[in-house]
Length: 305
Image 1: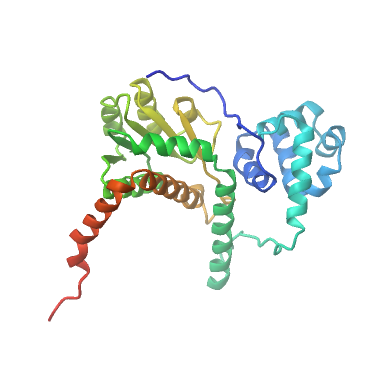
Image 2: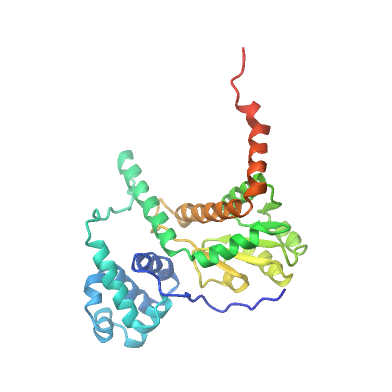
């Protein structure tokens, strides 16, 4: 099995208006400052920007027409005209009776009730953004590869390692051979054993975690099918990924770092991948799940005195 190393991320088709805001939030941190100004403008005032020509938006953001066009293309649109149509659709969606946005900034002196409300809103927004931006073609291909894999290795460190362990445990319970590697040395030495017909999954919010990229690269070179679950679809990890599953995250704050805000979206993607595999392997997955429940049933039974 051979792979073509990917140099950059590009969408197969323009994102729907509902996915535009999610894509801006996901890609903005990796943009140049001038492109960020364009992205922030279209996300902050889609109705106003939809009324502007490419020259008008360039003047508004203090950039150039070329920067506006490059930003549109990075967001997945063939040109500015397509982005403008999406902005009009997003503006109409926002004006159709949705509740006003709630700020998610958590202050040190916030009452606990406000913390709950802000976190709940943030989590809901993150899940909605991830669902809107998730490429179902890439997801379907990932499901197909995992469902027929001889072996599945999952790589992640820090908070992402917890998500990796969650995925591996789920896959084990439906009868698949899956291992989550949190030790970077063991991850590489295990990746060396992979071959065509195996699957390697890297989970990294930043897309640039060396301890995750290295085993994925080794697995890629060995011919395994490789999958990257990342918040940066243009990050270094995607150079060695056959399939890319993009996550979205809430805005970071002092009390809510990236590791915390990225976990929610990663878990959603992992659950989508697992359910897809369980559906595809239902004839063997269902009995395996039943057997695992039965094996643990006595541990949940009330103890007699």
